[in-house]
Amino acid sequence: MLDRMQLKKFIWAWLASFWSASAWAATATFASDLSKIPPAAVAVAIALSFIGGAAATLQKIANPDFVVKNVALEIAKDICGSLVAGLVTYSLCAWQELPLLLQPGCITIAGYGGSRVLERYLAAGIARIDRFSGKPEGTP
Image (cartoon, rainbow, N blue to C red; front, side, top):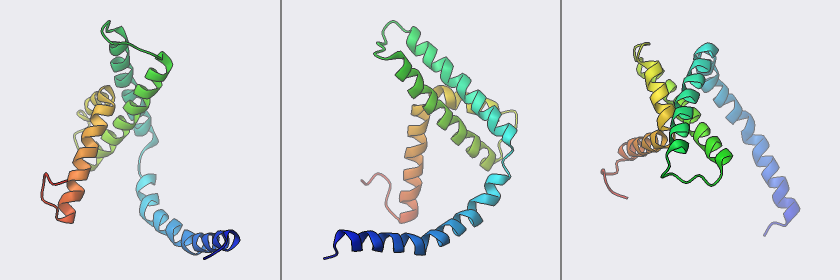
């Protein structure tokens, strides 16, 4: 069995040998795609997501039936979820080449839905992965 120092050296050697190949693959794959995204479009998507998330959060806080234990935490949770949902929706809209007039509405609605939208995206992604792996639908 390897002692602690040998294990540490082995891990560093392994990282050193594969890090450059992984970094090159990521650069070759993602760099050209990411550099084509207009920064103004991302800024608009973030703003629309924020608006949708803020509307949902304010509606939730204004509801007398909803008990808020920590307002700051609730706002942070909702805004993070809405920003991620909005940016993922922006990416999906761009990928599917939705008309430009529909994209702001989709992004704002996704921001409003926040974590509920992300759960749907996750379920759809997992179902797609299962289909690719040959699993029949509905099996755990």
